[in-house]
Image (tube, rainbow, N blue to C red; front, side, top):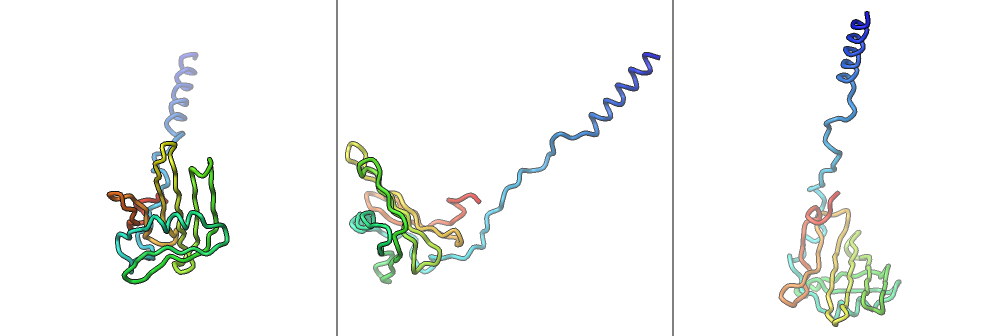
Amino acid sequence: MKNLRTAVLCISTMFLYLSSSAQKNDKPPVTEPDYNKPRLFDNLPKTIPVNIVELNTLLSSEVGSKASIGLSAAANIKFDGDVVSSASKYGNSIKSVVVRSSNFNGAQLTISRTTSPEGVVSYVGRIISFQHGDLYELQNQNGQFVLVKKNYHELINE
């Protein structure tokens, strides 16, 4: 009788073990990027040289002021907008400014300047709109700062 009871207990435990599922083998929910977002900067070139003087003028702007930076000298296209954020930290060794565009719908320009203790100055920045499929990223190419056009999904994971 004890052997029968032990056998039934083992068989029922085995059925419970086989029928239960603690974890599923489903793939994690990952959102596919939207490759069909409209392009905002189709009429602009792939690279746009940026003047350091314009960047420094922009970085000295105060919140609420108007800002403008040239995007295409040949076509006389400018990024115009209002300064919505301006920050300075660590004795002006880090300065940042955010400009909300008035002529490129939904786009924002973010520029930051860092100065190392040795006096080396570097810039980072982007022109980005989360509703569109393209953006510009500020890069240093052979000592010249240029805005380089990129696809949104190359930089941002959704």
